[in-house]
Amino acid sequence: MDLQLTGKVALVTGSGRGIGFASALAMAREGARIVITDINPQAVDAATRQLADAGHQAIGVVADVCDAQQVQALAERAVSEFGSIDILVNNAGFTRDKYLTKMPEADWDAVVDTILKGAYYCTKAALPSMMEKRWGRVINIASRAHLGNPGQTNYSAAKAGLIGFTRSLAYEQGKFNITANAIAPGFVETDLIRALSTYETLRANALARQPVQRLGAVEDIADAVAFLASERAGFITGETLHVTGGRYSS
Image 1 (cartoon, rainbow, N blue to C red):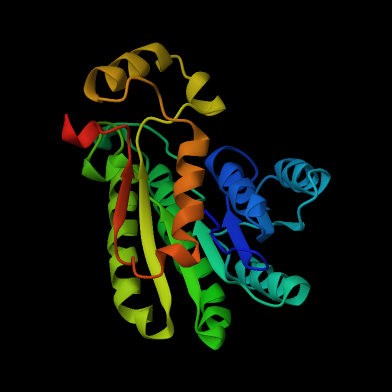
Image 2 (cartoon, helix red, strand yellow):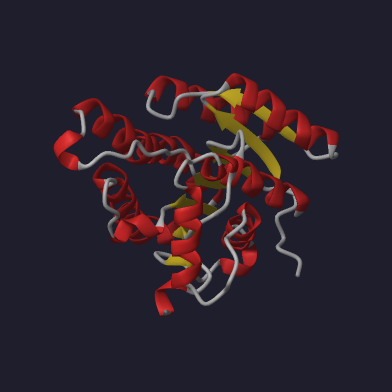
């Protein structure tokens, strides 16, 4: 299926590795020009070089999505280099797991700000280019944690907020032919997940609760991102796509 992404410009936050990089690569393979951005300079350099070595057009920009000036400079660089921002994937985020009674305020702020304020800054910076062209895609990487996870009140609250943000944005921007959708991954096997001391327990729990008897891969999420970014998904907006191996049906 031709996703008709040739020439589109996709900015993916938190794309130095994991789901973010896999999403950037999936869209690059469909012809999109990619803006890699991450807070980690080494990750940005490595990801950008990997795309370039594979023959894709890409630039890398180090930026903190919680800093409005850095985000604005990021958007201006994307438009200067490639002419527009057509696709925005708000992927930047992380969690610091603690029960609420033991959670420092700094942990709450760091997680919520990165996920929600980051999406606010990046979307606000990208929208003028999309509105001018009257075409755009905003894809927010949420999580199955929006239903609640013990020890993740900060992360769950932020991801639930991101889904509400997505729905409201879809109402606001539909008249400009801009869609907004969220993807809620299930248990995805990344390097960070495999490094957890609780990995085997988490893996067993996930497999016990989902019909598809394997863990998710970053490519599973990336393929969903590429589809929602495409011309093929132009009549889909305000939705949350659960990519979980069927966990919610079990």
